[in-house]
Length: 174
Image (cartoon, rainbow, N blue to C red):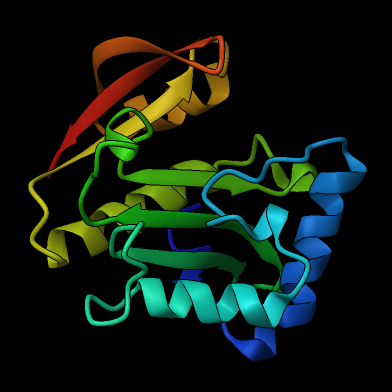
């Protein structure tokens, strides 16, 4: 699986792949796309692209947000968008329980190791950004995501409640 995907920043050229990715989530009854920086809530790809581009730069980040890098996971063999993952460089009060990173894989491509590889590659990016650790939250019942985090060195830190759901925070030392 290693290196079967690459993480790339969203661009206007990737619009159709991104819209197809979002559509597949919605067709599977998933209204929330983790790690998508509200792509699931935005009608205009161009507006979303502008927002994630601005939020990746400390000079233009939204004052209510933190510097965040957003990446599409593109499969090398056929150029298909497999997933989306983000890296929040710091945690504000709102994000302290949500963590530094969120990710999702398109429903038709799950259970193939893509999320593990996406997180692995993101950890390299976090190291290059001189981050010392990542905190990642996951719903208690999301066994697949817990395994992804643990395979990448995640250690259980604590539990919390968010929107009447219990979730756990894992720490990955970089």
